[in-house]
Length: 292
Image (tube, rainbow, N blue to C red; front, top):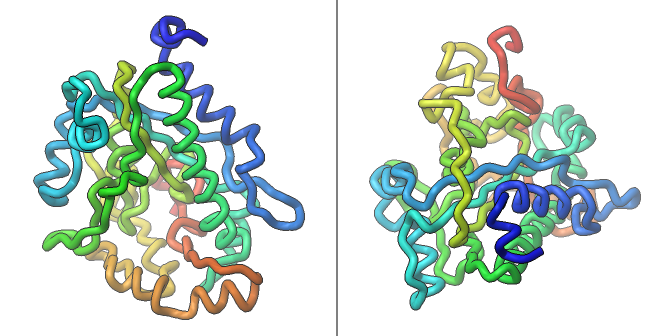
C-alpha cells in the first residue's frame, strides 16, 4: 500500500494492522501446551501530539514525563516536526476469558495463565509495538515506541511515588480508551484486565473522541461511592479507600514469593498478580451501578 493510499484513511489502516497482528500472528500465545492466545480483539485509539493533556501530565506526574514531541524529537533530532504533526497511536489488549476466569478464582497468587500472559503476552505486546514502527517506517513515516526508547526510565514522584517518563495508561486515557480505577488500573469498554501499548508517529490521524470528562468516570467507587471490590481482592493490602499504594504493591510483586511460586508451580521464570483486575465489576466492561 502506497503512502498516499494510507493517508486517505490512516485510522482504518493502523487499526486493521494492529488487529490483524493480534488476531492472526503466532506471537499472541501463552506458550502453554495448548498454545492458547494471550489477547482478544484489541481496542485502538488516537490522540494528537498537541493534546493539552500531555502538558498537564508534566505538571501532575513530573516535569520528566515526556510529551509526544519531546520523545519524537529526542529520537529524530533532525526531523522538523511540530506537536500538531504527531499522533499517539494507543492500543488496549484484553485478556482472554479463560485467563480472567482462572485468575478470578485466585486469592493470593496469580493463576498460571495470568502469569504466562504477564510474561509471554507482554512479549507479544512488545513485538506489536516494534512491528508498528516497522510498518510505519515502511510507509515513510517516522515512529517511536516511547516505552522502549533507550532514555525511558522509572522515576520517583513526590505525589505519585513510582512513575516513568512515559505512561501507557495515560496515553490510552488521552486517546479515549478508558479512565482510571481506585487501584490505578485503566477501565476500558473491554474492562480492566488488559495491557496497553503505544507508538508516537508523524502521521495525521483524527483524535478519538473522549466520552468522559473525568479521569475516574468509569470507576464506581469514585463515580457512585460504591463498589471498592478491588480493595478486597488485593492480597498485599495495597488498595485502600485512599487509593493505590504503589510501593506496597511493588514490594509484594518483586520482593514477595511470587517469582518463587511461579517457578516452582508453573516451571518458568515469571511473576504477576492481577487480582484487582479480575473478580471485580470492571473486569470485562465499564461497570454499571447494579453490578456491585
